[in-house]
Length: 253
Image 1 (cartoon, rainbow, N blue to C red):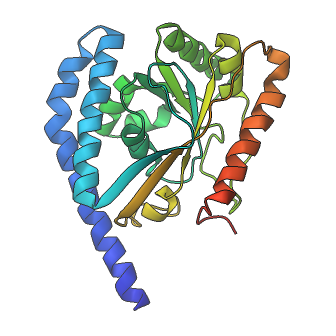
Image 2: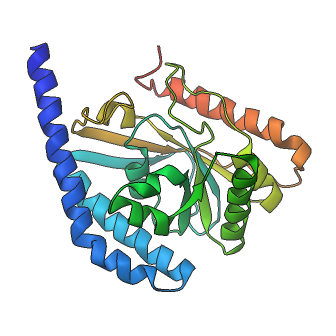
């Protein structure tokens, strides 16, 4: 039975990858056309195209996504979204979860080298190069410029996959510095099922099923200064940790 389960996952993952690439290739010409437009307008259009891609691919994968709101969410407001990073599925779910508002994701520069996908990526995300402090600082400046254009930003404060079997791994300061310096509220969101849909351990672990995103209450940064980064970081960490335990996230041991 164990081998049959492994075989199903492998075959389903291959099926999922073929669909991933196939639908992306169909939409690729529209992304190329959008890339010639003004940077902000073109980026917004590319995100709309990515949302079409996500809607189609989730349907064909048999993954049923739903947003849950612990408090009402104002999509007309601008936020620094932060999320728990636990799976290769996190970015597609972000595209499904955040709707009716413009946003940009902070992503690793290395991902831009992937054929076809890399073109989508370069034109849709704010890329961070962690190779040195100067390049990391440049990425922060880009995020601030995006916010000044009334666009929300999305950051994984853990930086990389959480492989600890704890609710979260340690947070970096970046998201909280940006929020304070631009006086933009933090909006934490939780991915409860992406680990089950595709584990960080293998890209050949795709499975159909439910995929829940939980929007938590916003965290105000009004009046905070750069000296309050650690206080804000700990407050957001504590809230997200508590809620992941409350919702019984499956990776927690």
